[in-house]
Image (tube, rainbow, N blue to C red; front, side, top):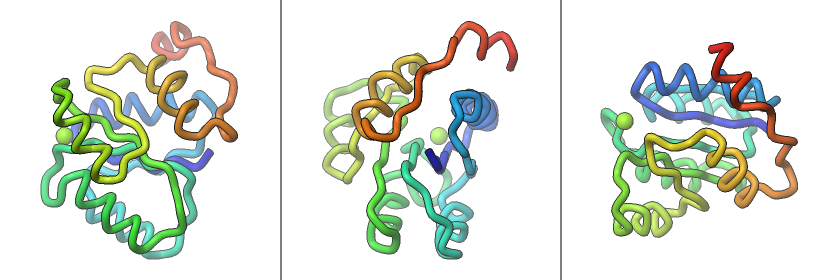
Length: 135
Ligand SMILES: [Mg+2]
């Protein structure tokens, strides 16, 4: 699956990118919404956006709104540092199909949210213990 990953915290971006790649996904990762929107404006196709909400400049909900208006249909999962139900509800209201709370279990990201949001495109989960040891 072609995934766009948007996260401003460098270690989280790097580790999440590596794990998604190890699962077999093609990942394009971005530290801010501006560079991601530039990438998409070149017509690059993707299946799933996984986005942090708290970002420098435009937040994840604003970036999603721009992509929804400019790109063919795609699925979106929010990563939020806030566990409160109202933040999760805000993500869904903003058009995210799923939400994970940081620090999230990567296994949960794969098995619960990616599988639920993109059932037809999910690959077999890999061994997460292995993945984490290799990073
Ligand atoms: Mg952030």
